[in-house]
Image (cartoon, rainbow, N blue to C red; front, side, top):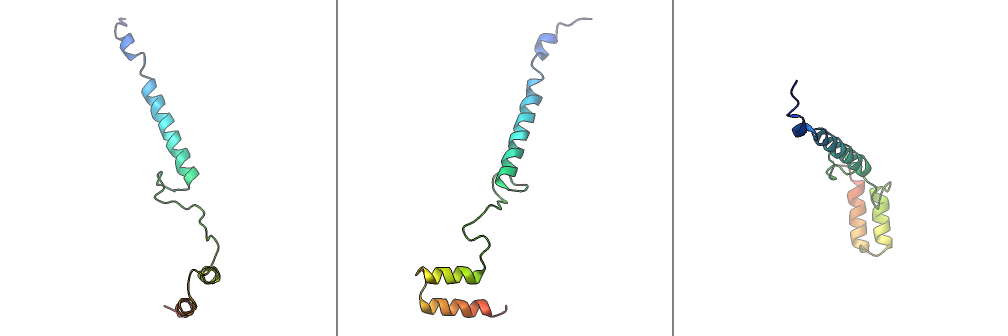
Length: 84
């Protein structure tokens, strides 16, 4: 049996190993970011500043901090109370 071709295939195992490492790294990134099927944040479901707040609570907080006027607050409250 002639093994003259053997030196050319000595590093063949490196490519599958690199592919495996790449796939594992992508899976870790995907699950760490909570992106579902989108590894680069397309489906990002991370925590936001107003997690758990209702629209009414956000409106009250914005009015209390002076971000909106009394008239805007009243109009937005009417909008929130009207069913669509």
